[in-house]
Amino acid sequence: MNNFWEKLKKPFFCLAPMSNVTDIAFRSILAKYGKNRENKDRIVFWTEFVAADGLCNKLAKKKLSHILEFSEKERPIVAQVFGANPENMKKACQYIASLGFDGIDINMGCPDRSVISQGAGAGLIRTPELARKIIRAAHDGIKSAGQNIPVSVKTRIGFNKEDIDNWIPELLKENISALTIHLRTVKEMSLVPAHWEHIKKIKELIKKSGKDIPLIGNGDIVSIKDGEEKAIKYGCDGVMIGRGVFGNPWFFLLEEKPNISLEEKLKVMVEHTKLFEKELSKPKHKNFAVMKKHYKAYVNNFEGAKELRVKLMEAENAKQVEKIVNDFLKEIE
Image (cartoon, rainbow, N blue to C red; front, side):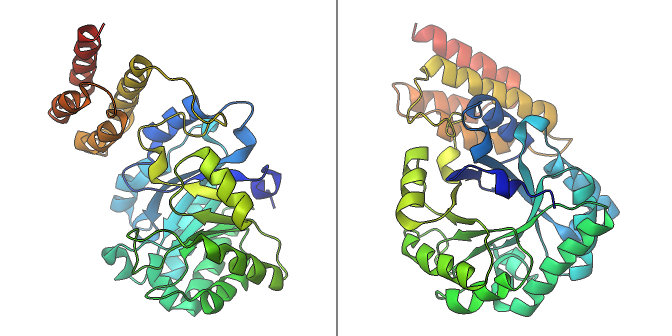
């Protein structure tokens, strides 16, 4: 197997799969400004999650195709897929594997009600036998594509309550190459601090299973230093970062606080906007309004930030955003 997980330096850092956030535009910006020679073998990118059922429908597949676009500079990159139908999972993974991804990750932790109602995402925590069938189906699909890439799983510590001792061993019975744990239950969403103390128990279960696979902790990582400290303190092999990367394409640089000027930050925001418009903006794939959640993260903690944000929220395209930023920079010269 072409298992990239075995080649990573530890602790490594993973970009969380976030819907309408970790699209090709944002990942390209993160790769350009956050990856370098020193850290390239310690960073793994994830796509947004994609519905297996959707990839099995000709019309839906066309609409979802942008989720599975990536560039070489993003490698290693993992495609994340969700679903509760083994046959559709097989077909979806056959297609995904044919695109050249380094790995496929199965989402078994999404708390979204519409996903759970399908029996997918975190819904699979309630149906461990089906979860195991889904993992096997993913492997079958990869094999059908003539590929041999690793399958990993991202999940939570339980549904309504912590259920590690029952849930995790079920996953470990199958052929998974890595395990990411969001250290909260589904019920807790992201409303309570992540329970990092559970990493030790999960690590012991992996050892008991006879497997030697990386364990990735997820929850409340605010910086690379914080992630490194948590990995060392609690004993996981890597950490996954979600909200911490918002508005910070330099997040993955191993130096703690790169010296980025306000002008540079705003110009990268404009670059990000232009790339989004080129690759994804409606009518192609996404509404331009999706970019505005990024502006809230890029534009803060400096004089005039609130007024600039207000103007950016009214922008309708990249050209307007560029003008607003240029006018602002002239004002503060």
